[in-house]
Image: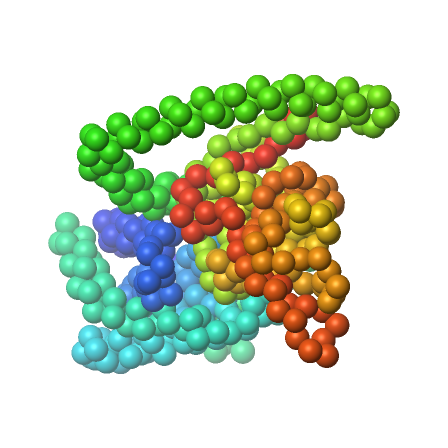
Length: 165
Length: 275
């Protein structure tokens, strides 16, 4: 958290903006046909910031974003915050490798992260709530893989603009 | 150990986040202490939900703007006709209500509670195999309480299961964890209507071979359990199957309310519990 003090505020604005729009996208009610494939926008945004700026955004960021998503989706409080903290940690650890990967290779890694997240959250939901694993539970990984390249372009641009200012 | 964390602050943060998350989950599951912070956060996050609901309302207004004038005229005529018809029926109902009240006083029974309606708009729908819920943009501020029944113009939709200051959560009758006491309109046979996790299918369990139930029967809420008021249409029996060597028959029904199409719902409030 020490690093937070000497950062430019505009970069933080970019982060907050992207998180806000990711939350809106996550809550959007979409057509039935793509409902299960709807990407996990907030997770993708978290992965992006954790790998581009691993010194600034880490497990605690993941924890806070998870709390927000927990409140919005009205499921067991604390489950997503646990999962996202883990994801942020893993992304931090692999950030050096991710920076030299092509976007499509990153996509595969993102799918792996999401699978881990889904496994953790599904497991805890199974203990605390009525829940069972189904095929459709995993479909959003595919949607997220497809969305990732586009998201990195948009967020990369946002980050670049905020840094110039 | 401390040395390790100094070299690896992320690890420390992860441990910290894990400890907090796990304790939050444990507290959440065992007690209602966390409702207040959650309610506060939900108010802060309200703009997100409002923004997320914009595309749908824009699409709706586009649809209505694109309707041609003759169509609107026809629709208007139909509505006018329906309005007068309904008004006439209401008059009849009022007299029946009065008669019913009189009869009840004669019998010494307590008067039937009257319901008032709160119109609520759906902000988001959450439909997957384990959970069927709507989030509506009305909450504590609009006098909504936990456990109130929710209907639309055709039939029962579900009940309020979570109330936050500005929003509340509605569990649908098709939610796999939901069951509702009902009876058959034709003969008053009591039954339970359970959700299956499919939007167009309900299950009516525990009816034996000699139960008088057939395809096309209308199931209405029976009022038992005190949560759903009696007499609202719930579902229509779509299939009755007898399985040999089984104690119970397999009955499936189709919900009457427009669960997948509605954009606003009505929340029933008993008169007098508006405190």
